[in-house]
Amino acid sequence: MARSSTSFAPGNRAAVRHSLKSRSITAARRAATRAEVRVVLVAGLPHLEASDLPLVDLACDVISDLRQIRAYLDARGGIVNRKGQPQGCATLYGSLMRQAVAIFDRLGIGPMARGQVLSALGADNLRTVKATETIRELQQLYGTDA
Image (cartoon, rainbow, N blue to C red; front, top):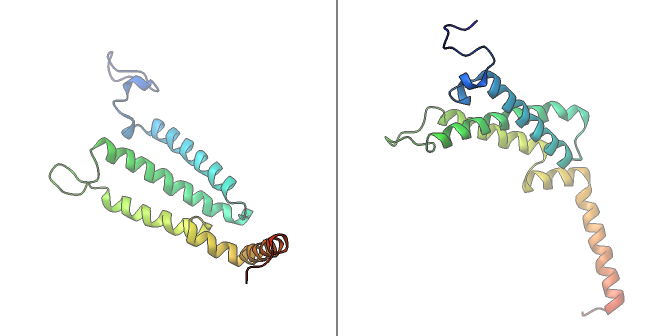
């Protein structure tokens, strides 16, 4: 029930001054972000198995939190306030960034992690074999320049 005759009814979005403190709007944005990130990660990481999906869920949570904090910081002019001091959430932001990088490494995201995953799966050896075959084919076609 509304507090006064001038109050908005529950659920009326016009009553929200901004979305950072609105649980319903924040929850909806968070769910949308998690779904978006999950689709990208699952589609882009074909080596994942069903047992890896909880790690994907953790990555989605961390990225969602990072996006929310980044939006907050952008609205306030950055990670440093007018007095030259870091915003209160700067430590949390840094911690979440480190968590995201660690999760990405475990999932095989990034050049170094991807190389480790591919070599562990034997795909690195497959690349070497294909490259050697291609070199032999080219030498047969054009001869060797030894």
